[in-house]
Length: 254
Image 1 (cartoon, rainbow, N blue to C red):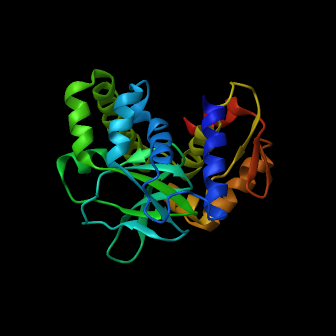
Image 2: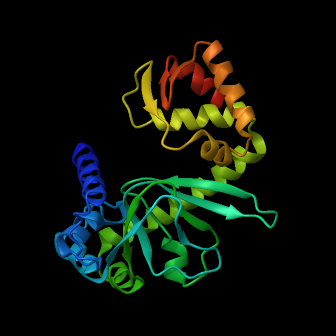
């Protein structure tokens, strides 16, 4: 399933580059939308008929790298799922700086809570790469919440995971050093892989974006990477990082 989803995301991205997304400019290709919706965690194990119901209300949007997808204070048009690309969720400050809270990749979604409650978005949402999104309005989601127990369970799980993630984020910013935050982030990239002693991971964002995500300066992050390399915990080759000792890295993170 994971391999199929990755292949599907790569194919969608290549079609976007080639101008062959099949949406005829209106973002309403039913098969394309249904495929994107079906791969979101909200719709895991949901019947095909109910996936098709949600997809029939949804639309596709394309955003180039650097585009502002949603601005803080605006209301979202619905739940937004990432078909491919990379999205940044950031809390802007009055001085022009921002606190990056999360990066979203293919088959992830955001906006469930604020869309269902009809609250303004509290974050800026920015494309960090060429990105394709599925916009699912609230109306079909409310219908499914009432009549589909599998979808309702997925929705509760998604909202609960968001709450846990927020608490962990606050704890990391308050109770962890910059070295611990970097080690924890690298370990999170390796987490989906088999529990081998070493593995290779690809940084999904630039070092500048990662520094903002971790709440440190780019210079501090470069120094921390050098220290991890000197301790023979990692090897670096451009954006590819080989973790040489996951157990020791996890020890630093904790």
